Image (cartoon, rainbow, N blue to C red):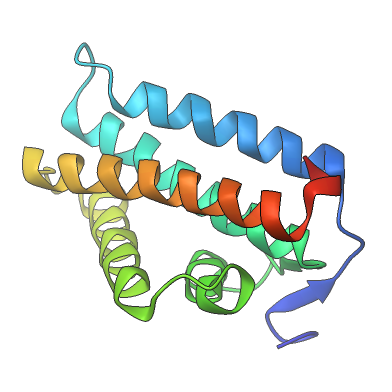
Length: 140
């Protein structure tokens, strides 16, 4: 995938820290009752994408954002980067598709989708944090 959809990079403690902090903020924002379902969903999805990017970075890669599908690539590499189960990636990919529909068609987001996105973002945050502690504590 290197050169096609990924670049090889040196893992960066600073980048991991920034993405981790931003993902935490987005998870918190996604749980705020004072904003629309679409905005909360977008915040949860962004946290998921940032965590996938963080996992790639910790493994020495980043997506080529100049190529279409970089969100999909980041999410679909999670089984390789942090050992996330394939079933979970299928759920995350469904959320990605929902985000795409909402962003480009203005479709409304049901509260059930927001609830799922927030739950997945919180679970992924814990998973990636645990994985980093076990595999790359130098990046924390």
